[in-house]
Image (cartoon, rainbow, N blue to C red; front, side, top):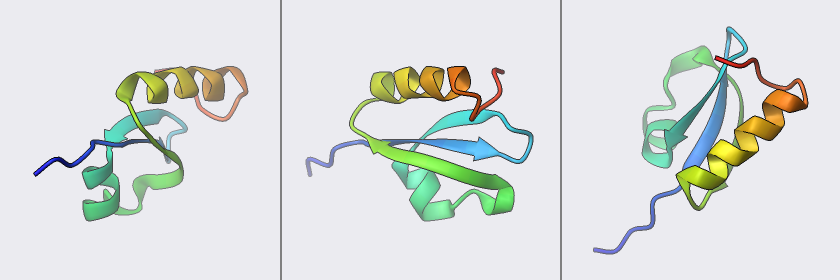
Length: 63
């Protein structure tokens, strides 16, 4: 089975953003800690680059 992995950026209550695989975001929904989410992105590298932009834009706090 060839399933393509996608990634999301999720903003937590504390303001920090994490990069998570789609099955953790869509399947479990990781509780009510998720304030906002962006994605899906086709690669983890793309999600990392987007997270840097979100941090620079003031949408996320750096870890």
